[in-house]
Length: 215
Image (cartoon, rainbow, N blue to C red):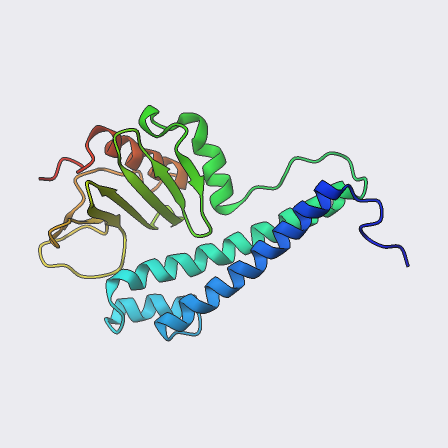
């Protein structure tokens, strides 16, 4: 039987091995996240956040992370198949992009100048580093289900759509301030548009005011 790697360029073989390793690491991260919440599946986490048996945070973030890890693993599986095809003589095909990778690819050319060059894809989100010192992490599952975290001067902020009730907060989108207060979002985000539109609207608002105008 022909050895699969017999005619594969060493660099391509290394890339294939790296994708396989990352898929394994994602599966292990998923197991640890589920174990930490005491839930068996992602949707159990969200149900527990809704009924209050898990705290809103980090419960909602764990749910997003598990869902995004699932998406990322499927994307890496497609990448693995693509690399194997190319390594064994298939025509040069563009690399497949889906999930967070597709989102990052779509927004990179139109990022606000303050974040240009400071974007990095993570296993369960997209990180941004701004020239003003702002560091943000975007976890985007759908245009209606996401969490944006950012830090400025050692103060942690969060804008999200977690299904939790907060006194005085009417909208689905709310802000967690560093002092612990939770308020309605002061930023109008295009929730009916695609994920890229929501993320770009948030980053533009953050570029204008790292506190979104809240003091």
